[in-house]
Length: 309
Image (cartoon, rainbow, N blue to C red; front, side, top):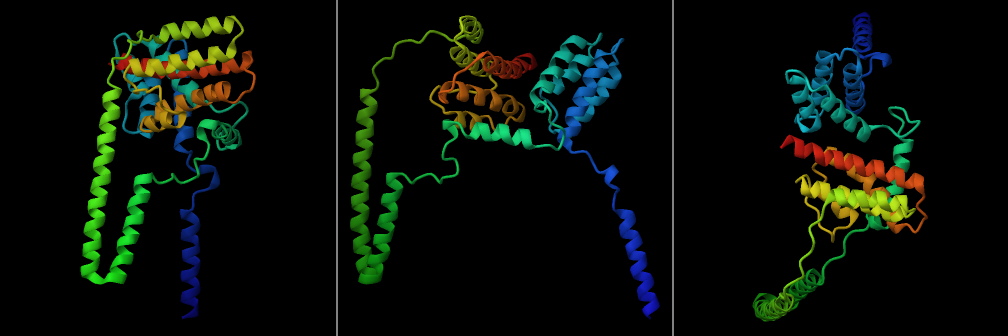
């Protein structure tokens, strides 16, 4: 009997050892594989002559890693499926994707130190302060909590009948308060109904040209502001993301959260703007060039939506 148990244990150990994949064969993370496939497609299209079939295969594999298929890679597939293939347009789109997803300088796949440092820089900006603190309750919510506690205490002290009378009185008081608040809000809205002056139409290209002019004059802080403004206008005018001037950076990124491609481009651009505009630090030419490239990536994402339409 002990021999059978020993043989069974040995067989189980052999099977478990065979089922465990060697370290060298461990699967590549999807994000790393996606970037490698995009880079491979670029290399195939840069060959002489362009290797269109190989590029199409690489793009198809990349699209399978990021369902549902679409976005810029869907447009690349359409470019390469034309007769003749539009190689230049496909290369432009692929390079835009590669620029957004590029690793920080000196980083390797799996090395998250540089990425963590960049994220820490973003969350040190004033717009991201107090993210870990729970939101405070509104005064109305605090009032209802106090009323709920009062009714519970009345039920304990007065009994069911007494608590019903007390609850009715509280309900009437609450209704009177709500009516007063509604009446006051209606009066404020009426006072705000005066016609507002018309605002001149905005143009993303004019803002981009203004950013270049500010940089040429040495005002790099203003150049960063206008470049980021141009990027946001591009998103709004091309229908990629509605933008409200009253939003904070955190609110802007929250509205874009459902669009992974847009978030990948918009987050570093917003961080560059916040650092230039709110940190109080001097903005030199190198900071301007970095912000300009990040804002240009956002503009390319917006342009992709227009071309898709």
